[in-house]
Length: 134
Image (cartoon, rainbow, N blue to C red; front, side, top):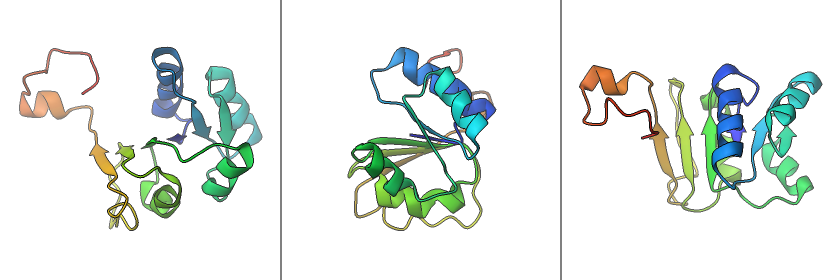
């Protein structure tokens, strides 16, 4: 599941996930035209992030996703993510949410992965020359 699937990073993630994985790609977008956009990019399903996410997944007959990637407004989506993510799932985010509390994900053993595109050059990591995902 990609929260903010119609944005710049989200739209690239939809395409990458669809082309390089066998995952069912679910992207969120709040307007009809942006939902059409993410499905045109390759998302199997588009749901509205302004409405309850778990209920929309249930209506589609989709089990709890093992991977959730949030591109924006993560602090407002954490309760919904905690409700729907699979136990021992992986939750990635790229924004810098203020005052975020990860209620509900600790008991599920969810791993949380923050990503900043400048981490490699800032810290001179050993994989700095790699274009592969970390």
